[in-house]
Structures are given as C-alpha cells and as structure tokens.
Image 1: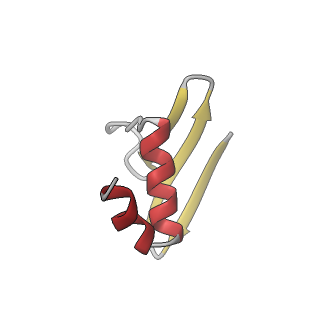
Image 2: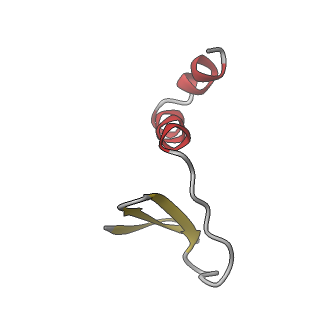
Length: 60
C-alpha cells in the first residue's frame, strides 16, 4: 500500500511493506528512502496527531 499526501507543495510517499515502513520525497524519488522502526513510526504518527504526545514519549 502506498499513499501520498500533499500539504502546500510538500509531498511524501509512505509504503507499508512486509518488512516495514518506507518513506520518500515524492518529488525526489531517486534520493534516499528512510525506513523508521515500527516504534519510531508510531511515535511520529502520535506526535503529528497530538503534538503534546511527543514530549510524553521522550520522557519515557
């Protein structure tokens, strides 16, 4: 599954593969792809959804 989201002119593509998550800049497809751990990805999504959760996660 791949999904692209656009806010203003900033886009990323996220792919959920059998081995994890892959994220890349949709305009710079030949550049690096990041592969966050499941824990890091979950923390990122929580922080995006609720910015105050980032400080709670860091305090653990």
